[in-house]
Length: 104
Image (cartoon, rainbow, N blue to C red; front, side, top):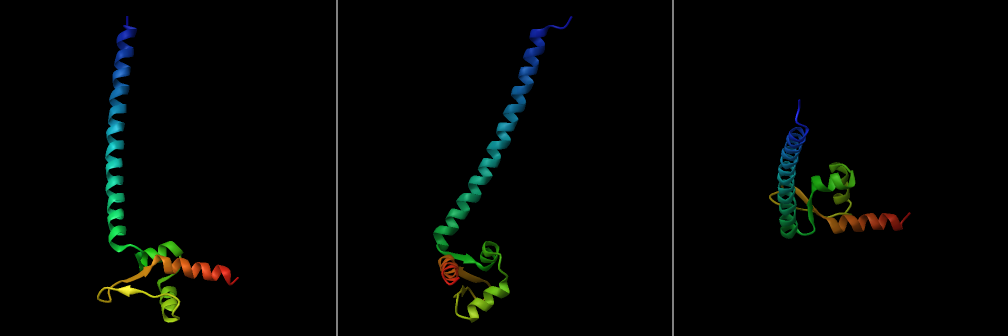
């Protein structure tokens, strides 16, 4: 005959083992998330209000060519390092959005 107490203890031990493993996986994911957030925070401290053109495109859902037009029209300014990448001030993009909202 099967000893019910032993069966329950075995099931409980197996459940605990699974839970411990899940906690370890969760801890690992939290560590990775913390590293990503720390890296982002460090970049923000260094670059402040500046965002890359790719970030601006992703944030606004506008194309790079639209940003070029906005620069040529003098509506946005940009900066670059060795002409390799354009950077925009997030505050200037927000101001442009607010101006367009007021004009409608």
